[in-house]
Image 1 (tube, protein in one colour):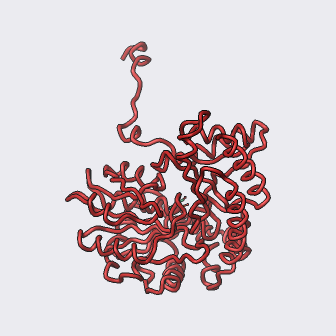
Image 2 (image 1 turned 90 degrees about the vertical axis):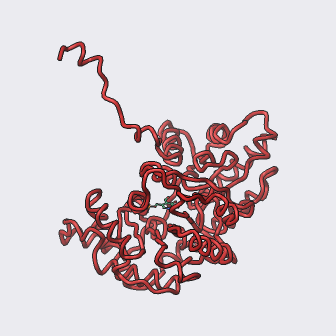
Image 3 (image 1 turned 45 degrees about the vertical axis):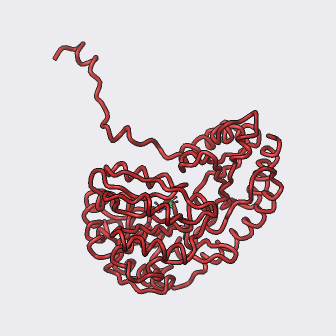
Length: 403
Ligand code: PLP
């Protein structure tokens, strides 16, 4: 081959590589970090993790694991005692019983969800994704060759089970449920979950039940595990959970799946070829905390979050033209900025609003666009309280100045 031909040919990426882009939240985070490194005083509201120290039991156990040279792979789907401890913890919290052989530990819930998309979907199969959604859901469905079918939440943030039923076709394989919801902050009611379970049974669907934010449920709301509500759907339900939010160790990459054994076997196969196992030091770190059967850290974290939520809602109450966010669970204020965008002459889209807030308020937020909702704005309140107060006050002033 001639030298010139070599230069003219360019190696191409796959079609799949063009299907997805980096997650909008990580892009927003990067934009925030760029502004900070340029010396700007910026409060970062984009983060999906808690600014809080890790529990000393977990820290100590991880340090011990390093000192004891626990450096090798674990079993593909996790250390046996950890799987047993997870089964115990999930069973206790849900009021329904699972065993260790129904648990797989994965490198974050994210990788578990990808393995599931690969394990459950054939090309063109459809997954019902309630909108607004966590953007990784549709991205992974597309990576696996499936088709996300978007169905709006009700105005009160609950699943719209009737609209979901209308969207079901012979290709529908999975109903995706995420409660407490990222980004909306809704916690689904027992009634709505019961109806969704009944629908899944009638149409023979899998349910993926993502409860990664279940530790954080606020003021009068209650998180329900859908299997505990309707045990008849146990064999079609895959529970996704993670220690990223619950124990504030997002970077350690420890998530898990609780599911029928056939699904656990599929996850074992996929994980064995993709990540081998979850981070071993992290697994040893979490183990004694779970075995201690305390929820010391969760109580501490919840105390901090409750205070932040309350201070934040007080500040947001000064907003004109933006309704009070749901903030029933998780740690996001999700604002409906549709009126603001309609009336403002300065900003027309939520992305322009994000840019305006970086410039004017020194605050990095996430537009609703990556969540499939052009009229949303997501603000995390899992920050240090001082940062939250300073930044949110500036955000409210800047939004009120728009009209
Ligand atoms: N599910 C939801 C709804 C999330 O928001 C996230 C993270 O932001 C995850 C799953 C994944 O968490 P991880 O991969 O860190 O366990």
